[in-house]
Length: 357
Image (cartoon, rainbow, N blue to C red):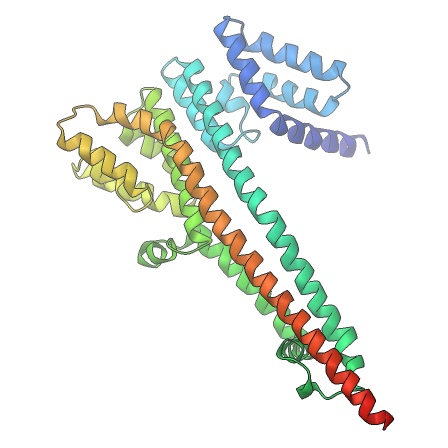
């Protein structure tokens, strides 16, 4: 029982650590800039967590210290607690003895990706809730309301919305053992295709939602990671190799294309032009390259961090369009249901009057 409680406490501690990651990075940077040792910083954080009664968070800091005492670096000690992209940047900083720059890059990356996630969630919560409510209403009408109306009027006298809703409900009731697996399979196929489909098919899919949103999200993260690694004096070729290890299939496909181009002696601009990095960024690099700039890596360092605001706007616009599309479809379906309800009311009134005669 004690072991189970410890696991629960540790899990809650990890959640608490992740929710306060920005504060952790900021305080870590302050301590590093004041030449305070990592061990002292972590011991202090553990003591504060214990004093506040957060045993789970204290366990997390204890684990980080234990990993470092066993010979691991900070990047090794926080594996499983922070995103892989953050670990990659901190590790790159450690490699060149510039841990402060590594933590700064990780902090920026973490905040930027949090903003992107907040944009997606903020836009999609309302339309998703509306879609679920509409689905629930249609099920209720198909199962409970429309069958009662059938005692008064025939189905073909009802509106199209009622006819379609009733037909779909009856079909699902009769073949639920087929419909449910098919729907789950389609959802699974969508999730799988977002993560794993590459090549010419993905090049076309990236033009339509939700693939276009994933592309913008991934490209922004890629540019941030490249810029962060270059700021830690990692060459672009080495940066691509580092990112490829922990990347998902979709991102790895583009990274492998970049590495292939670099290995074949192509320019940095050509290597980055794989279809993932926004064309505006590639065009900027082309203009610098044609102007005779001798250090494109220095320019890429700035672009990744400077481009984040534009990437956020693009993601905001793309997700906003999807959200509004869902809202409009839901509104039109509700409007059709309301119209058919009024029409049905008139039909029932006419049927009652004719029966009274």
